[in-house]
Amino acid sequence: MISRPASGQHLFLSCGEASGDRYGAALVAALRRERPDLRITALGGPALAMAGAELIASSDAISVMGFGEVLTHWRPLLRARRQVWRHLSRGAVDLAVPVDFPGFNLPLSAHARRCGVPVFYVVPPQLWAWGAWRIRRLRRDVDKLGTILPFEPDWFRQRGVDIVHLGHPLMEDYADYPLEARRRAREERLQDPTRPVVLGLLPGSRRQEIERLLPVMKVAAGMVQSWLGRRRVRLVVSRVAGPCGRLVGDLAGGSCEIADEPLARLLERLDLALVCSGTASLEVALAGVPHAIAYRTSGLNYALGRRLVSVPHIGLANLVLERSLVAEHIQDDADPAHLANSLLGLLNAPGRRHDYYRGCVDLRRRCGGAGVWRRAARAVLALLDKDRKA
Image (tube, rainbow, N blue to C red; front, side, top):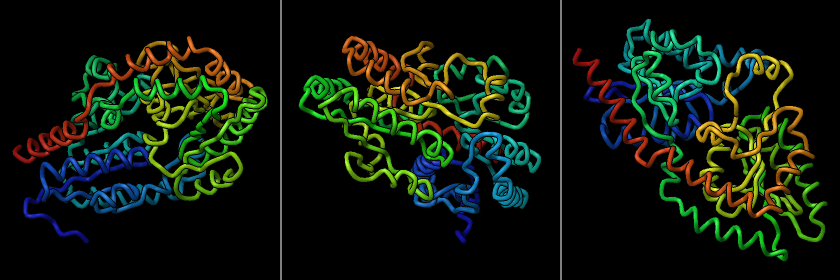
């Protein structure tokens, strides 16, 4: 066990999936720079552990999405919940910092407040998309909310939530990204018929995403290859860790490469991509890679989602820009023929790619600049110190 530091301050982080684990690790690093003796315990994964947080429970078993998947994973979810609830109830935590993952972290916030622990919620639940009725619960259980998307500050302020705007975490990697140089290099490759088209398949990191999307993406890539004739398509699939890695690894060999490098580096060499919805699609747009979004879920999730979701787009780039920059293929429309048609439309129309690149420039401007985690750390510590003085 890590001993309690001399300052006596103890912060608890809750990060429930791969993206939250990365965000949590970045926040821990920023907190350590500001206050090296702060004790940090966490629910999280390997990135948080590597950053120096003391894990009291692993997030691996609870990283699920969708109503049906939660029901089938109730045992590990309940086990993690009990561990975290006990940790907060012992009275040693001075501030709870949930990161995203609202299905788990909103109840956690309520429990923390019952235990007298203030809450700084980073990466807010997407109440603007669905479940706006939960805003009363958010106001009650969260002392400060760290927003990341440009339209979120006004939305939450208008509903009485105390917010601090951080900017999007991806801008830590993309604020100084050489977008124009990458665009020129990509256009030179695409206009040379002797060079292969490098197509990235990014089906996500969760097992259910990969199982539903990767086979469809692979068939779509084969259709693109058949329509291109002699010009070769080279597939690159982003490797993921854990049991899901085996699902991706089955594609290795032939003209398919399994890439181990970070996504930011992988995107530098892609000409086109097929991407799951979510943060990955925003990152691909910030890197300026022409792509299409695919989303497939269970029939139950889709039926419920159609009734609950109230936004016109699922792609974050489209939501930020308030227009359709990237083609979205949802459920039955996310079939190989439609995905292949979207890719061929981008490949065969330089004017369409030019419009896309202009949209990417606007997107980067709206998402803010670097320094997100420094701002987050300072806001977290300000709340921690304010509560301690009170």
